[in-house]
Image (spheres, rainbow, N blue to C red):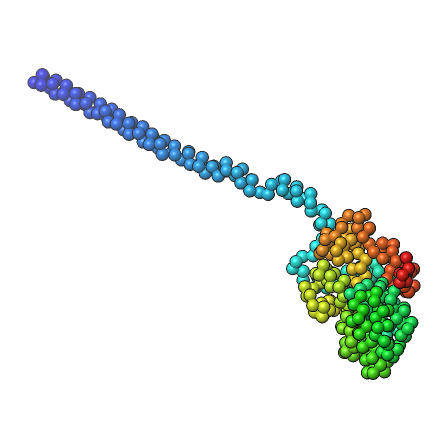
Length: 350
């Protein structure tokens, strides 16, 4: 019996020891699982570490975008050339109507200060002489007309005298003006019209003047503005050229230019405006080579740089009193002489 009890105790002890050791055998797989889980976690985290490297790639490529910017050399090249033609600011292409009016009127004020003595550059003593001289000025200079008309008016002082003239004799006098046959026909024709239709007097209305042979709107406004004191815009070749350069209008037809420019100024300014523009065109803003470097309105001119911009070289391009040379009139107004202007020489002199 004792033996059996002892054996029972021994068996119980063996079972107990077996039971206590079992967990030890189960911990090993758990540890392995835990280790495996850590490795898996590590493996999963590893790609996450590489991900930032991929995101950082664009940052590394950022410097590659710099060449897309305009190279410094190109900018330097532009800067090196630009000053020659960008000294004067250009008005914006989309210039508003109000801005255009202000700029146009400012230009006229500036020119009024430059040419306070501006006047018609044809010699005349009465409306008849002015209308004849203006007709003769087509396709020639006022200077050549002024050198020619003294002989014409000395022989034919009135419309009646010129209307009865022998065409060949008039042609000989007018030969220096060019197109002398056509001009002879016009001045004799308008003299006859004045004698027959207007009692030998030059009419003071536009609608009457344009009916005279050889007289268009330009000639009519010259006569109205300077012989009768009635405002008018004279659209000659100088006026047309400057209107395009100053971008006052895009019109090319003289009548449309007249209307467009007239709308920018009060009517009382029209005659003097014509003088200012024409004088500037003859003295500084020439057709072939304007003297931009000597121009008093350069900061307001969109066409600055079309001509000579060097101040010293530009001064050599100035004409008439601005360049120290004689003017176009043989008998200029005293104000012109006081400003340093010189009378033109008579025909055949020097």
